[in-house]
Length: 440
Image 1: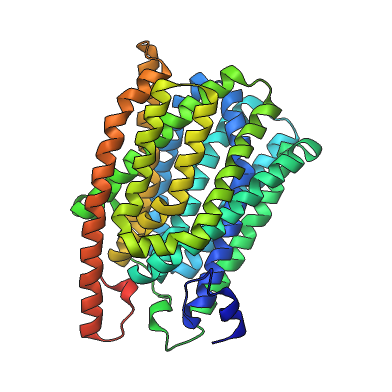
Image 2 (image 1 turned 45 degrees about the horizontal axis):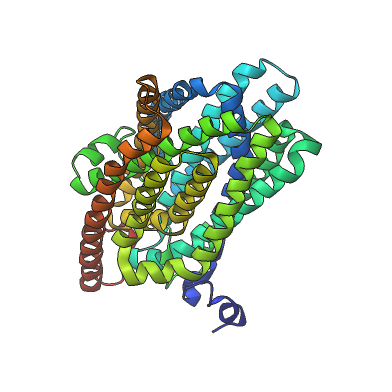
């Protein structure tokens, strides 16, 4: 055992063969989310600047944009090997940011640019993170994912901590527009990590489970929907993601309305959003490094995924009683903490037991289109509830049984995932040391 591995084994539950891949995955997610969390407070402030009444329209515009982008992404995946199409995606987003920077610097149509930027950041976040986790599900097996996805997720959390710190420190002296350059740098660092991760995964030919597949994923650009519709398991995961959107969208709209009503000034609003991000990052990082892997291994994916709807059950009950800023902030921090620390790693492990094409196409459809389509739907549901005269407390009360149903679904998906993982492990043992991640 190397000195480096002895120093890291308390925080990184990886074998010596897995260590390099785990560390580059950590760095990749760190750079990706640091860039996003520099942008996130700017997006939230621009959403308020455009008028909270316009938020349902912005969510709908995001969904329409994703409907257009999904088959283009599917075509890219079908035609290029993984080592090529992943950098192409991130270079494209970096170029977009450079265009936004020029528009903001020269003050061109600021109101329109603010709304387009809100939509763009929402699209970027889902695509960039979905591509990352597809890569992880392709690279690691279910057993490896349970051990390593918490640590890898901690890389993203560390980046999510750095992003708001940069925004808090530099948004006033540099101005918000110049923070886009910082985000571009982080995106390009993520591309560097992709290249190094591919290289480290092939460094030991005897380590078959970590060898990347240089072949094209193949298939049709439009294969994602048929893949989803013919699999009850994937449909269940899609329903879980839709319910994740239900909880997050309901709470996001509540947060936007309460902050707009009680906190005045773009700077103060941006600082509140950045402070929430910072608190979530600190809590999530500590949990991911020291507890996530152990909890996933001990209790399984169903219990870990169910931790998030359990928080929403308690949070919606609290909001029904006290729909005020302090409660909104506490519930927002708690649900995002539980999502990053437990539920999201568990959800990514769900995808380690599907075939390779489903990992890149159906998974992207679920994580991107289903999620943002649900955002748009639930945004209009929230807006309609308010139009009918329902206050925040009443809306939270109506959301309670939905969160309870989500909790039941989590347990069911966990049982199916464990059965699939056991079957794949048995097949791998019978067939010899084939790459587990490419088995269906």
